[in-house]
Length: 451
Ligand code: NDP
Image 1 (cartoon, helix red, strand yellow):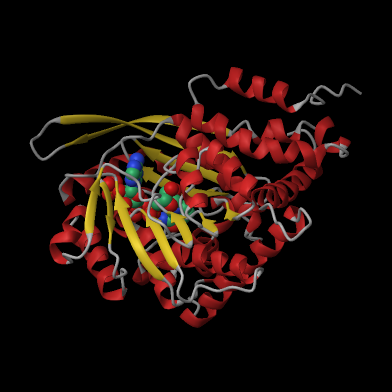
Image 2 (cartoon, rainbow, N blue to C red):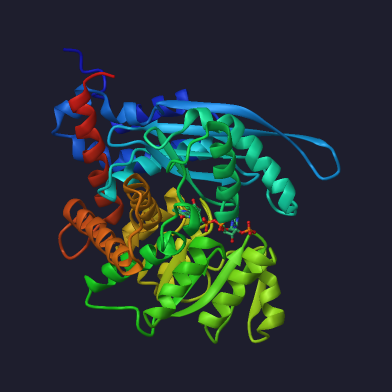
């Protein structure tokens, strides 16, 4: 039998780069996973012979489409939309929709690839997908947002379905946008099904979905600290972002006795030495979700805080750090600064916020470092629970869901310990998450043969 995939890591990555020119984010995500999987596969011929990693690193399909809409001034606007269906070996494709000007096919391919492993880690039957558009929601009127969402769904609806592909929210897509897209799906298909998650509570949504990613990331952080006999009480936290994930991570840090020092947006970061307590977090939620303002407005309301324009917050000394904004927002130099300032633990709320240099820095320093595919899986986990509730036509109580979220995050932590234990009390959580997620998807693919 030909063993054509029995190549070494550099040769494998050479092929990935050649097949995906101009897609740096996708190549970066594959590289990070391949570094660990090649070690794991060294003595496992079946994965090589069946070219499993190469197959996971080639999306099942990438749908690209035009999205036309009319702005309030009557101008015709043309955007690009995508849905990347990466792998459905263990369940329907599942992953968010992102509206942001930085969205490209490369960004969505990296996100769909990562999502495949993340979803496997939750233990729920979900494959990996991701979608979005380079549409910029900032500064748009509510009616423009609605028209865009409707136009986007007018194409997307034919590629998704409750048992096919179930999108959710992501950057720039919250409850409002999910509402407009669900409304349009329902209108076109005349079906009320669980085709999207992150829905409103009155129309099929699940309790705690909004909070789940941020809360889950902090549960994961607490699980990591517990392995060292520590908790969050009295610990200082530096958080980036001020959207859904960041504000709910901040909320849970405060609930568990920690002190949040920073939040940010693409304009810069605010540093509040008094700590960002629950009342201030509520103020930020209102600023971002209702008034649609900028984080720099915080200093006018809370004068002891300062705003640092155009910078990320990683230079502020802290015990724990949670990057919760976007990809590649924490670079090698930032990682070195965090380690030098005594940061003990990093839990990623965002997807791939740390670049490869930064990942290598955290690993070399042997601090507690959780990759997003493990620590931010709480959101998709509760999305999976929303799918179950939709299928059963019922709603679970908040306490039940909170417990399920905690249990799932603990289960993911256990999987990371199982496959990431390096001896001497050090766990490589990146390796643990990559191997645990890969093994589940890979074994399903082996069962299906060459398809
Ligand atoms: P939101 O749109 O609610 O918030 C995004 C935040 O990140 C905003 O503060 C935004 O600032 C900031 N941001 C976005 N792009 C950039 C950029 N290029 N540079 C600096 N700051 C930026 O998104 P979410 O909170 O939902 O998502 C944040 C991250 O978490 C993403 O990586 C997402 O993929 C990931 N994630 C989200 C999940 C969810 O359930 N929502 C689930 C799992 C992961 P500004 O307002 O200036 O744009």
